[in-house]
Length: 394
Ligand code: FEO
Image 1 (cartoon, helix red, strand yellow):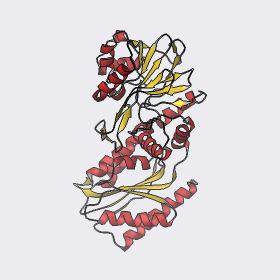
Image 2 (cartoon, protein in one colour):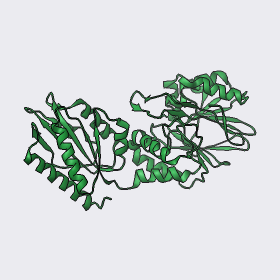
Image 3 (cartoon, helix red, strand yellow):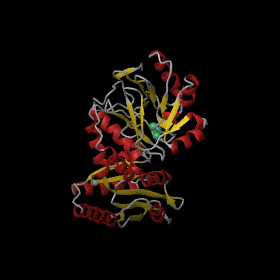
Image 4 (cartoon, helix red, strand yellow):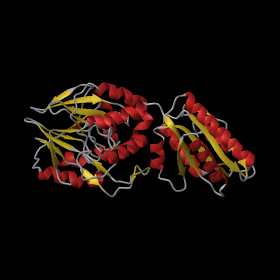
C-alpha cells in the first residue's frame, strides 16, 4: 500500500500484511494484520511514529522514499515489540540523524532486543512535549498495554492519538478508517481478548489518563484507524467495565463421545434456562474465538476426558490460556469422564489460580453417562442459572 494522506503533512506510511496467519507463533490471525507507521512533517522537524515489522521494512522505506523524505529528526517508538520497532535499525541506517524517542523502559528494551546504541535514544517523561514547529507531540506513558514500556503519542494541533497496540485490530484491509464497524468490532474484540484483556485493570487507569483528551482520530498501529473515536472507546469501556453477561462458555474435548454427550446435555439444559451457550470443540476450534467468547462470559464449564491420569492436553492448553487471559468470569466448573481413575479435576482446579471464580460442583463420571449423570448435569445447569440470576446477569 502506498502512502496515504490523513491530514495535510500527516501520512500513513505503514504496511498491510495480508498473508500473516500467526503472531508470536501463538495468536491466530485469520484476517492478516497491518503495521501502521505515520509520518508527520512539521514546519521545523519531521517525525516518524513507530516503524513496521522487519519482514516488511522495504515497504516502509519505499513509502518514505516516495514522499521524498530526505531527513527524519525523530522516530517515536511507542512500544519495543518488534512488529513496531523491528525496522528501527534500517531507519537509523537510512536516516543517520534521526533520534529515537522512547520511555526510559523502552530505551532499555530497544538496546537489549535490537542492539540499538543508547546514545541514539532520547527518553521522554510522562506528559513531556516535543515541538516539530507548527505541530506538537505529547507523550503519555501508558505502561502495560501490553508491555511495561509502552506510551501513547498525542498530536495536539490535529487532535490525533497514536496509541500503538491499544485500540488496534489484527485486520488486513484496504480501508484506511473503520468504516465497516461490524467487521472492525469483531476484529478489535478478538484483539482485545488475546492481547489486552490480561491487563484490564491497568488499562482502566490508562483510559482515565486520556479521557479528557480531545480526539478526532485514533490511529493505532494495527488495523483501521478510528475517525469516530467514540466507537472504539465505547467498545473498550464495555469490555473492561461492564459486568459479565448471561453466557456460559463450554470448551471441551471428547475422545469416545462420553464427554461430548455430557457437554451437549448441559448445553441444552442451560439454553432451556435462557442462558447463551458458546461451545468449542478444542480439537477443531480457533483458539481466538474462544478467547473472544471469554470477554463477556460469566461462566466457564470445561469438558475433559481423562488421559494418562489427567486432563486431555488440548484442554490443558485452553485452560492455561483462559487463566492467562484473566477474563471477567465469575463461575467455573468441570465435567467429563474417566475410565479407571486419575486426577483430572484436581489438576484443572490447580490451573485456574488467576481466575477470581467460584468453583461449582463438578460432574465427573466413570464411562458413558447414564440417567443419574444427566440429572447431575441438570442440577449443575440449575445452579449456574441461579447464580446468574443472583448476580442479575443479562
Ligand atoms: Fe503490535 Fe505489542 O506489538
